[in-house]
Length: 594
Ligand SMILES: NC(=O)c1ccc[n+]([C@@H]2O[C@H](COP(=O)([O-])OP(=O)(O)OC[C@H]3O[C@@H](n4cnc5c(N)ncnc54)[C@H](O)[C@@H]3O)[C@@H](O)[C@H]2O)c1
Ligand SMILES: O=C(O)[C@H](O)COP(=O)(O)O
Image 1 (tube, rainbow, N blue to C red):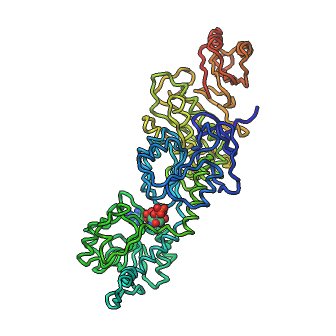
Image 2 (cartoon, rainbow, N blue to C red):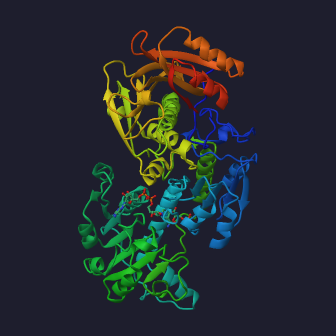
């Protein structure tokens, strides 16, 4: 019997082969392999009647990225859409690519009717994307986190130096016919203390460059490792120490609820009088009204801002008009090089995600390395099928609330990533009983939303850790079963499986050992163990042309109770199932759709 291709978090029902993914309907993928960064599956592929998916590019993207997208998808470049226009268009799109100006709100996901599978943010900040709504809708969000780092850092340094030497103001005055050499005396950078607020990619590059300018650099970042800072001669300090000792502050943290308006009246009052501030992060990390007050009070001598709470800021914005403020229109990422890089980075991520690969820049899904995924492939299928079997064994009206997944393995707990397996078990549990599409992105959310508590247990076995797993067991507690024999001694509906020669097998139902490969569909019969049962059931199925792929009998003791598992390629008719039920030795039976 041929090995079943891996099952899928990609489309709601149909099996896929993870290593060579194809659309649900036969189409040819035209993306040259060399153009695609090899990553592992992300499980959000589109199932479409159209041969090519549609990607809406809602903001200007570099040509190299567009070319890459066009090799694979229908690309609709529609810039400056109103929120209403975006909501209307989105129902026709499988992926959306934006920069920072487009708000990808909950309404966008709701309007997509489930078709939108990937949002690509061509840049770093994802504060314009409603990540919660994306996750709820099973939509993967990917970003391009590295290609504009240097551009942003260089712009930060440009603003720092321009501000210190009044370059913008002096330029404007000379163009206005003035020659004001005394007015625009600046301040020196060398020997001054720069506090880098947010020591991530951009912050680190700013710090490196500022060291080159002879500045004393400190940094504040609650999550950055101190050794990374020390490696470039930067001390990590507390927030208060950073803001109170700095001559210059440069902001490089993301906009989150914790960083929103983090520079406010209270914190400005703790700063050195005459401090200078650069912001190439997000406008929202500064309380802009408080900054105006701090500028007017002379606490802040100057500010240089690339980003604003509202973009573009209103014409009469007091900061923009302030003579001690230098502004640029969110240009941090806007170099030719960065835009080409970002475009390629996001196009590859979006195409990869649409192909079903696990994007390495996924923002709202666990990232599972390719090698881990290859190894887990048959167990991923096993997990989903065990989930499907277990839930179908539950009697109607019981309500699945508590599920336990037990993994037995000789591997150390740190050496086995179970997030993918848990997601697949969840998919198997939920999809047969609902119309919800479950994937790696929304599995945990969907389970929680449906009130299903999924716990995991690891049983460490002696032996070779070469195989990632020995077995997976799925147990559903506090339910009745349609097949009483599926209830284990401890009272749960219980199924267990193993991977044998790369093929998932069902190895235990309730207390009964069985051994059937998990392909096609399964009929489980409990019967009085006696000769001739296999033949009797086989001939009933044969009469109706139902092909039997395997049969296996597990019994408690000779001539006592036995469970027969019969694999069938087709779904038997009701009358066939009735005939099986009428065999005198059959005590109970159930048909399970895999
Ligand atoms: N102006 C632009 O065009 C432009 C370009 C690129 C990046 N950005 C913005 O710059 C920021 C940094 O980008 P990045 O690529 O370095 O991101 P990053 O994720 O590499 O770094 C962000 C750092 O901020 C830290 N951080 C989180 N909360 C913090 C807090 N409360 N206080 C201090 N630090 C905190 C994180 O630990 C992380 O190290 C983002 O907001 C991004 O959107 C702007
Ligand atoms: O977060 C980012 O990557 C920058 O703010 C760049 O935004 P942009 O793509 O709108 O230039």
